[in-house]
Image 1: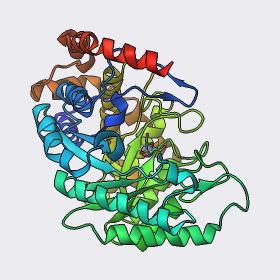
Image 2: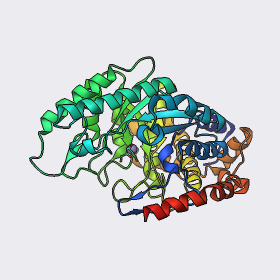
Image 3: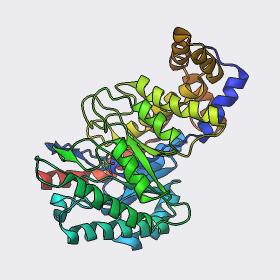
Length: 398
Ligand code: PSV
Ligand code: MN
């Protein structure tokens, strides 16, 4: 498939409109439940996470905001917002979605919104309300909710009762939203709970979001599905129901592996983007979706990996934007199965990297973000500045 001028214009429009949010936690030292591998250059403070995220945006031009986790990035609460806004502006990015954390503190051992203790449920709601205050002060549109709630053994809790508690909690939180603020409800089939998870799939998230109110939508984390689940069908259904609020992108081979987007199955990411672009073509307008990355890497260099992720996302999105939708719709109507499939494959196998290089150049960006980042010397500078501290963290960890 060679590209025409009209296709180039279409491609550039698609790229201009495509932004993907980075997770602050993707720049810090993280690990698996078996241990951490410390990187000398990893960010140790929220300001450093924003500085590193700013580099990703500087070289890719498509990552203008950074998702924050309340306990990890705002230990001081609301008073941390103004200073962080200034830091974000200094690095050319904005504070993105707000992630409350009702899963790591001791009181949440048996859950948060689904905890059998009324006092703990109230505490979880208070934290979410505090997070909404931070969301408002930060000028952030999305409150991104993920709950670790669930049980490990049959009989441990009343599944129906917990569902009702979730409805109550989400409704109460929804009541505090105003203006253009939204609430995204994320689902996950298992981990950390291994018998039942309170919000285990998109159907449960959808019902809870509907019960919470009109500002609540579903968040699809690509790593939160069982093997071989048809994620693009979930996406198509949520789009059709006007309930798709956003994504947490990552790739996986087994479970919630947090691997680089498109590293294992780029065709799946393409098919997801295709459902979105096809929907946009039919409706004549792009749906309002928050694209976010949810990955943290302890083996690859974190900044380079986020640049790689952003580049993969752009490539796969662009391929989906180049699908000949009119021809596809006609082939589907005539049940021309091979032709319809080949239309998708033609777009998927188009090498869009030359187009991307042109787009970058016309937008004042370096054509090869990773190479340009490596040549900038930033990594060497932060490695030198942070290595000592990160080594100390290693010895205190060991
Ligand atoms: C849970 O696995 C999750 O996907 C949620 O989005 C959390 O906010 C994030 O990971 C924390 O890493
Ligand atoms: Mn997630």
